[in-house]
Length: 322
Image (cartoon, rainbow, N blue to C red):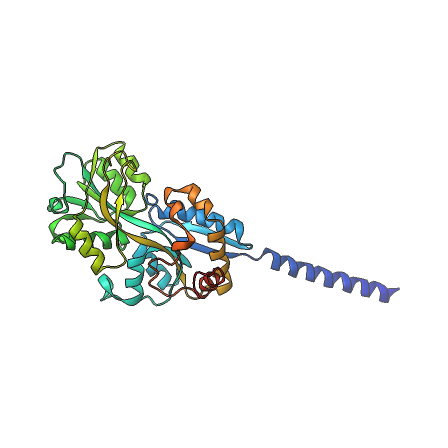
């Protein structure tokens, strides 16, 4: 009798331990973050929607979106191992990975890997209506919001100024994010703004509801030269009606926005995230106008860095690459 009780107790003890072990396995979660941009841009709302979608459709995965100073800052975060994934402009990502372009004298960030090209980021330049600012050259001596420090926005502004024979020394640059830029523009503290983001921008819509603004259309020859020198830019027009201030198309340039990650992420995990992105992209389309431009056909546009093996496997499965 005693022996039977001992065996029963042993069996119950083993069952309890196994149950606790099984519970631990079932409860195990993987946590991943996406560095986006300022809350006034497109990265942030799309990043939030992507994080929620991945959390819902990839079992055991919890994803959060974090605001940041965007492209270059995001590459630095991945480079330092401080975040797993991020959004970044294609040009900034390539220059960061190769140590070329405007980062020729900066340390290379070699652990950057690509997951997907998501949508085109359009450079939107505008000034207070009635300020007399009609062209890039008219910005000389003016207070101009050029973006948060280490952002792709600053990079784009610097390049476009250079193509018009100007540098930041010719203006009064304000290194501020979209939210602060919007407020200072509304308050009349700055004359013009550079926004590199998907249109329509909620910040710009808010700004033009409180201030009359006028968009600057770039010179077609300057755009041609810019695209030839920097192939990660493409000529685009912002269509009339996107903002109430645009009654005729505005010529400018755009660069793809990429979803990138740390090379050390598990290939299995990245495969699942890539698969979830393309199987549920309609969720992103419902969140923002630019969601309609997130298509599998353009998933590799502007991808100047190597794909993560997990993403590469998915694209091979669907026949996008061989």
